[in-house]
Image (cartoon, rainbow, N blue to C red; front, side, top):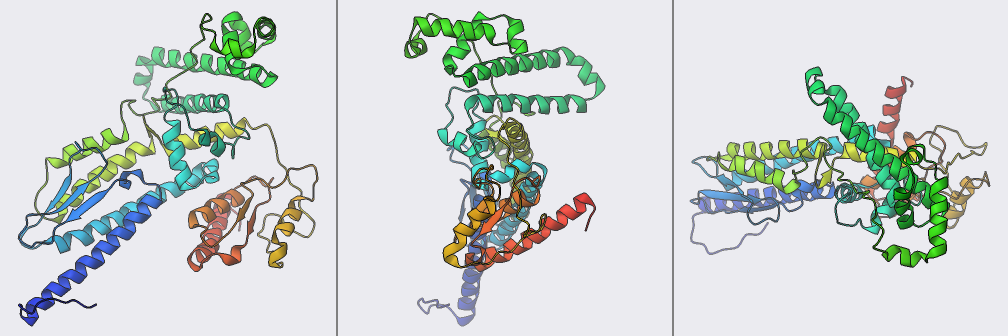
Length: 457
C-alpha cells in the first residue's frame, strides 16, 4: 500500500495514522462483503441498510446506521469513548452482521428442509412470493409473473387455484394454533374460532364451486354470478347442474363480453383478507423496524457494546416477525404450507421409468462429447414415450454464473423427491471453482441427511 502526504508529522505519528487507515479500510471491506451477502440471501432487513462512519478522533458520534427508506425512522448511532473510536466500531459491526448471516442462512436451510416445495424457487424468487402473496385479498392485483413462478408447483396456476391453496393453508395454521392454546383460552374463544372455521369452509366451498364451472368452460365472472342463483345445498355439495342451466340461459340472452360489464346483477364478495396468520394484521415490516428503533433509540450510550445491543434487539425482533407472517410479508413457514396445498391440487402426474443401465437412488455420472449433451439429456427422458418432456424442476443446465443457491435447491429437489422424477445436472464441468466445490459438498451433506432421516447408511 502506498500512502502519500506532506511530511508534517513524525515517523511515529505517520505510522499510527497509516495503521488506523489500513484497519478501517479492511473493516469497511469486510462489512461491505457481508452486507452484500445478506442482501443476496434475501434478508429484507438489510435491503436499505445505510451506514456512515466518521474518522475524526475527537468526534463523539462516529457511526450512524439507517434502516429503511422512511425519512421519519430513527437512526442507530455509535458513540466513542476514551478507549473505543471508530476503528473499533466497524469490525465489531461487521462481526455482528456475519453472525446475522449465519443465523439467516440456517433459518433458510431449516425452512427448505421442512417444506419441500420451497426448493422449487431461488431465494430471490421466494422473497417475491412472500411480498406478493401477502397482498392477496387487497385491492392490489398480483403480478402475472407470480402465476408464472407458481406454475412450477401447479401447472398453469390460476387465481382460483391460489386462493384455494391460501385458504386451506390458513385453515391448517389456525387449526394447529387452536390445538396449542391453553384449554381456558380455547373455551373463551370457542365461538370466535367456530365462526372463523365456518367462514373459511364457506369460502372454500364457493371457490370450489366457481372453479368447477370455470373448468367446464364458463367465464370466471359468469361462474361467480351463478352463486346467487343456486341453493346453498348445491354449493356445499358442489352440484353444478342448476348453475350450468343458469349459465346456459345467460349465454343465450347476452354475449359474454356484455355480461362482464353488466352492473344490474350484484356479484358475490369472494374477497377475503389473507391476514391474521398468527401476527397482528396491522404489523408491517416498516412498523416492526420503527418499533425496535424507537425502543433502542432511548438507551444509546457510549462505546461499541450499546450499539451492538441495539442491533441485536432489532435483529431478534425482525427474525421473530418474519418467521411467522406480517401484513406485508408472508413467513417462509406459511409460504411452504401454501405451496404444499397448491401442489396437492396438481392433477398431472409424472412417473418416469429408468433405463436398465442406470442405478436407481444413486447419482449417475454420464460423460459425453460437448456437442451431444442436450441429445443425451433428452434421451434419458425418452425411455417412456407416454411421459412428458423434462420439466423445469428436473433439469439444471449449468453455466459459468450458476449460483450455489441454484445448485442447492436443485440437489434438494433431487435428493428429497418421491422417486418419480429424474433429475439431471447438465454441464457441471463448467461451474467455477467455488460453486463446483460447493456442489460436491452440498450433495454429500444432503445424502448424509437422508441417511439420518431414514436410519440407513
